[in-house]
Amino acid sequence: MLENSVVVYEKENYKGGNGYKGPLLRDLGFPEGPYTPGVAKILVRQLKSIVPNHRFKIVAYEKE
Image 1 (cartoon, rainbow, N blue to C red):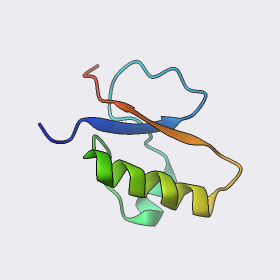
Image 2: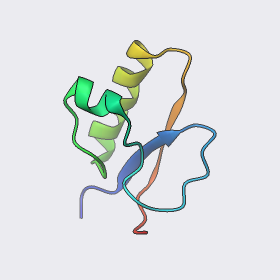
Image 3: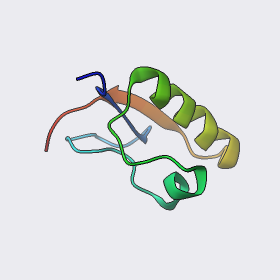
Image 4: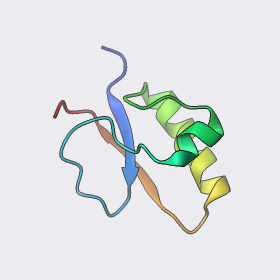
């Protein structure tokens, strides 16, 4: 599976699942994760440009 990365809030303790599911995904036109590493990086940059005071990180995808 190439989609092995998810995006979560930087301070969130990721415990599995699709990662960030907030309304900004819809605004940016992204589906829910998981993503390929390159797409995850693009999403983090896009989120940072919209909400610079929120920090996101990329973590390895784990099933719930």
